[in-house]
Length: 287
Image (cartoon, rainbow, N blue to C red; front, side, top):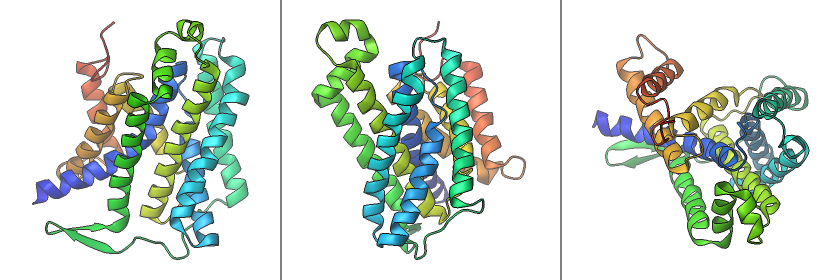
């Protein structure tokens, strides 16, 4: 039963990593930009979730508004920050993204205060028994919410005209334009979807911890970067598997290695070991 319990907790944590990292992968796959500021959007989603829930009394409304608002802000970041420098060397966009992320953390500190915010009456805190195991309702929401959102993304990518346009733009932007695909529109929608997923993850993590604070995006920022490298840069399937694997490794590691390493150290030890064997990531192609 301990094995099943740890596996369940690992998959729950991994589902949140997946929500964050898939947005990052979408941006990298399309533009080859390591969008570090993505973690700032994750934090902003958490703030919107807490503030709207406390003001309006509806967590569902807060989740929806947060995803749409942060999605639009993600589009604005693309327009104002990345679009003007797309033709510059890749490190220019990386530096711009890191600077934007640091600026966002400082803005959060100034606007919302340094000590964080909590739900006045946190919803979904009751325990639910499943197969002799107890889960918080918030944990169940996190897991199935991630499946719902990522499943929706898979349907959009595989069954819709936008999905076809997105894949064509990733493969060969110039060829896609020659067939009449509006690649600029594809990029905006790409940023909207990725940012909305980050916001959903931020709201759910804020709910689980009943806390959102200016630096809550710091750890997810470098874990998400490590996950997309592990999954093979730009590979959505690899990112999903790497995120879930990392969550499971953390869950087991905290029990069996917790005396020697903390949770984050276990995660990065695993990532380093895998990359030593497969430097191209789990699903990347060797150079």
